[in-house]
Length: 345
Image 1 (cartoon, rainbow, N blue to C red):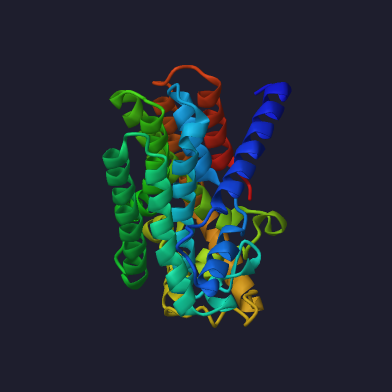
Image 2 (image 1 turned 90 degrees about the vertical axis):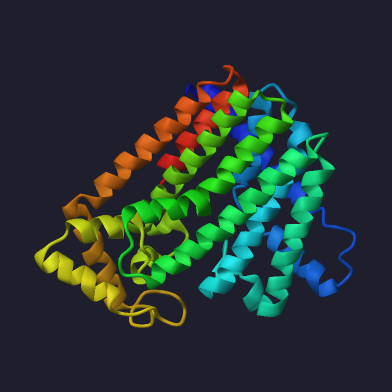
């Protein structure tokens, strides 16, 4: 992308991000409990890249619609995403999110659960407000996306307890946990923008393929990112014994001492206490474990396998976009996909 086009792309993306942030601050008037309103406001003011809402707007424009027509649906998707975050933080017992205390640690678990619940209702309220005659179609798609995300989270939790998780099962999980919401975002925009059924399908495939590549890139960054850029502890997935693509691939390939190392990590149980301090930082033993496992991933080819799959899924996403008219919005979706799956932090 030429420098001038790149600059224009960045300006437009920043405009979309700011618009999304402003849009999120509109809460239902029916929320009268001050604690609940404060909790919702705190969560939604937490920042973020607003990737999903941006995809809704650009997908709408890519099929010939007006971005403003997709504003409420974009907000609905971002609100739904925040619902998943507040509940994920409770399940993971996470202390921080985006550099701030999580809702359940700033207040308590009961309020955090209510914040998540009311965000689901708020998301539907915004979706239907901007449905523009597509109420049933959008509600059905949104509902399936919500069910898929929750199902994906449940599969992730099941995978943590299982010893026999396969790569195929990992991909089934991320298809729902990550790909479903991105695919739904793109398809919502296509419907609101008046896209043909073929264009809507192309956008759905784009989002789902992008979701796979995005999650694989997250797995990779947990091992290879620069700690100064990453914003969280390098090796967190290793310490948490997450059944990532890297771990599953390494278990399948490793032998001898390498296999014994992986088995030792997995035997530590569900607690990360042997490797983490109370502050969340890694102990010296934790850092040594992460370094040893990362080197193992490199030796057995797991890192290269992940890079190839990231590229393959990104290319598949871009092929789907090629079925849409050649517009500025489509070009921005192309660049967004490349940025998300080649990011270093």
